[in-house]
Image (cartoon, rainbow, N blue to C red; front, side, top):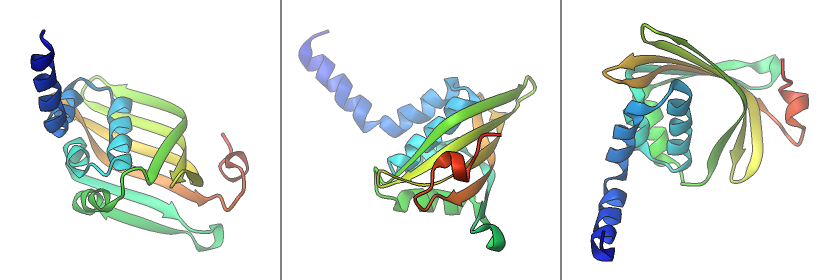
Length: 163
């Protein structure tokens, strides 16, 4: 392949990146689908996030100090709008440990212990639970739930011990 043809191919690949990500999602495992959602969040890529979330997606987060816990609930549209409003590089979610259960009939569950970083600093930790359905050849995230525990300078092992 000549250098000029190669550059045209690279440019087209970059321009159609969101489409390529969505197409590549067809070959992803449930865990890889969740990891791609995290990457979309880190890059403020609402188009990729929208492609990964099922039309009926719901998210829930148990937040606040132990004596004042509350449940935050989001719809798919709110999640996509929130991701679009992020600044690329501000959010990063790192998995410390994961497990995946997959049903051969099209359902999967991803469980993960995580640490959330905001602008490069550890902010909170907890556990995440993702429900996925295999829909038209791709895994779609139908549900999300997590525990959101603020670190406030404490270690992850202190605030979110491994069970």
